[in-house]
Length: 134
Length: 134
Length: 134
Length: 134
Image 1 (tube, each protein chain N blue to C red):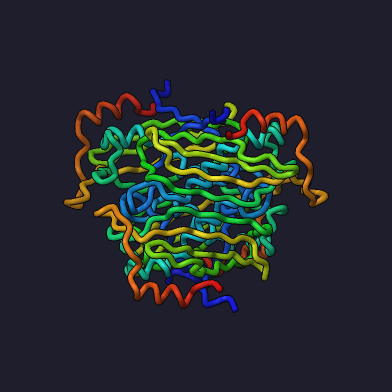
Image 2 (cartoon, one colour):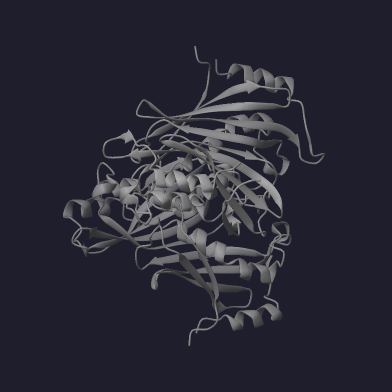
């Protein structure tokens, strides 16, 4: 069993390709950040960037197979780890039933005014549990 | 009457914003090119970039209003002008019922091997007419 | 005589290419905006985005020749037109002694608080004159 | 002792910022890939993408501090690990004497025709040793 996940589908764009004829790897962090919107909304329901509450500490991405222009893609977004004030988002990029890339973003709940980490509220922890990758 | 158009909707991404708090203008040419896919398919049904038949001669984009993260956008794509071997694609970017940007891309039907312009085939001209902005 | 211009040189990146093997056209507005920094500094010497004074009204870009990865590029930035509260920046992209792209950005001097256009100060008009494309 | 490294300096662009007022994290993989050019040249001296010999297996990036528009940045590029057919590139992003981000790219020497990994030639191994992060 792999847990519930957020799914976002889209078509890669011509400008996402590179001279090797495939999708360039640098698009993956862009797409993964975009697909974290549902998680951002748990912290900022209106996605109000003037009152943001998260900091990105680390990302990684592993490339398992070529990604192609002209075929729809899907990003699947899970919670990978639940910490006290930080958490991992684990994401997969699928195209034509193949896992093309996967990666983890380490995010920290943060008070930009006080410049300090903040404990993750219990109601958000409950949300996390429902999307936890198992 | 404004003619039939191709519609593509999507959510702008966090990374599309800039320090002024809105969407950065440089995303508009990216989105407009992406939304020209249905027109590219008339020339290359499989979007096969190893057998591409179009060259971009010119783009412009006018910015009518701010674009925001957190609200869905729609690109509407029309044919703006039908020439002998070239044509204009006219596009609009809408968000929350406001026209935020509009622009034209001048494209040329081109044979990359012979390095010369090619007349637009009559069946594609028929497609153009159905999407002609009037 | 073509007037004084700002020159910025850089190497295009692998991720700037597309599947046709050249540089993708969507990079040109990015590079042109980047090369407008010296002009932005006349309005905001510290490039302080929390006190920004310019709005972009329109851009265009014409593509004259292919741009290649692996060869240095230069953006040349001129003032193209001096209006009362708006002005044009005219820019050229050169690679290997060839003009690859050119374009104009229409910018407006703007008060974001009052939400109104503002006359261009006379000392900035003097700067404009020195870089006016003739 | 930290070894010899490749240094690339540049100014971040307005479009690299995001709504939090800093540089968006997704630029870091773009800049790091761009700064791997000197290493790409060991495998493809002309950076000829029609005869490319490397595949990217994995990237990571850790974010240590905010990055700002208006201040020059430097990417420092080292070899992080020398394997038989694969190797790690370790990179750091510096701004105003602060380490803002660091990361590793795992690259594989690859024959795209035969679709198999290839041993790293001994002359390139010698180059690697000179830039090995210690």
